[in-house]
Length: 119
Image 1: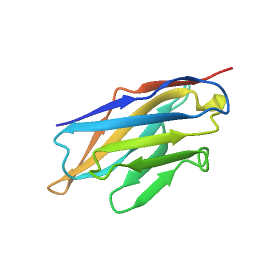
Image 2: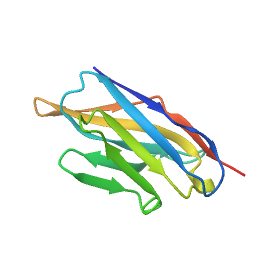
Image 3: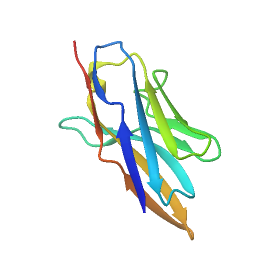
């Protein structure tokens, strides 16, 4: 099927920047949407940013103006450029992809990468 592997997580100081990448492999055709979700301790998983084939992007209000999501030319990878990081950005970040095959949507998740914002 589709496998997603995240990279780029780590420890960063408040106000710093970090770039996350997610590479899709396997049956990578017709990935309609790729993006990022995150889950902080004690909170539910929430949408961070998505990039949909055709040019649409979607951002959580809490990250607008600070985070930028993009995909490569082949649409097999998705990148999250995070700037002006805040303590509340600390979470496990999960890559997500939606594939449409024969009119049916399939949802795939990576294993997650830890982002810790701390001084």
